[in-house]
Image (cartoon, rainbow, N blue to C red; front, side):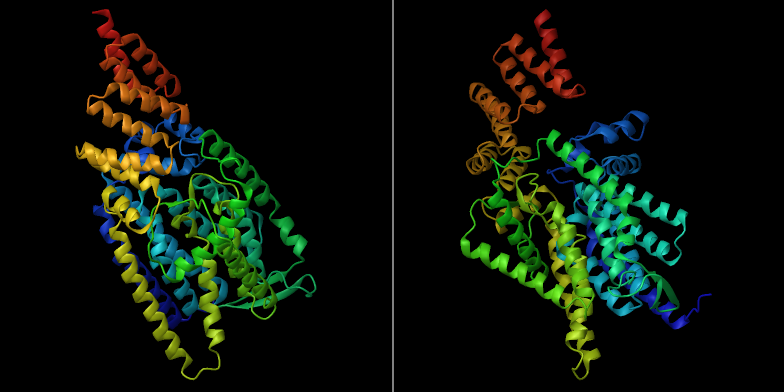
Length: 552
């Protein structure tokens, strides 16, 4: 029977109120933000399936869609549901992201407190997770619904797992497995979760203790009760998670297939192995640098074309040095290897060994992984200062300073996500060689009717990446508006060469040809667009109009 302590219960409730308030302080403004002309078009504003709502056809589409080079039907369904309630009101979609983040924050605190019996340290980990500027992208960008939704299901899976450990019965195990599958359907990044479950078996659950006899009862002293868990051999713990690893392997195969079908998976000719290895070590170190000093954050970081030997060896040496140290100290401080391997392991699918897209790293990839580093800080700093006088006061003051600094930094970072102009202009201010930011700013100018500025930005994007089909297509659109139809057709041809399944380019080429009076050629292009995307409404309309004119 549980021994409830009213003081500790009220303290936990107060911390929960503080966590909710901290999230609202940072993210309340996002309900007034717009969609961003980067992925939000694919996910919502130009996605007819999302806008038609939840029906059998669209539910089925979500199970097979690979438009974003991902397989995440649960994310699609959540966006459909949002559209049912909010239409194309961006504020509603933003609010849903904030709610998922807020609930994840609350359950992360309750989970850490439940596992460790350390409410103060658990609160610190959770507050940093709630407030860190690196997490702003995941919450303030509608397209990152997949990130906040999958993180919520990640934490709920861990919650169910702890319940199973406390009372290992089949229906609890089945619930863990079911939540894990749902999480993979929100974003396949959960493939690393079985590994994390093994880590928490080591600490703080202590289901695995090297040298301890099997079936030995390990007593965990929680805040309100004492729980006893059975210490098991490592192979038993691995065997217990075999279904999770099998499902994760299947999800990985589906993800690679979706990425390849969406033309996002890059070959080793495009990104050589040695460059990927260099990017891996440098990214692991740079994420840590951004965690401690979150300045110059952007929606996109171009892939590193050149890396100096000094940068590579410094990053590699630091990474290997930290890894060796935490493993060496593992026996004395179990949280060290758990936190570090949590960070390294959960980051691995997105670190660039398998390169998807043209980014070297992304803030959103650090959303779950940095929890491991937050754990190391929350438990490590008090141990480091264990002999200091007035240690509690020093830790309290330092923690408050960290929270205040993160709040100020995140409040500023959130403002960069107000609209497309803010996102792209900020990226241009803090990065170099950012072809996606130049293309995005070109779109902003094009929508505002400033063709000259739009063309300058599109051409700069092409200078940085000549095979950038989207920028080629946009240059062609500008040329059509300027009456330069022959130049536009040439740009569309180059765009198709770079991206043969780009339906919009075929449609735009058809428009340029129709304007030149080449009706038959235009019809061919419209039909090519519809062959790629049979539901492309603009191409249907243009084909119908052109056929009508031909009959006249």
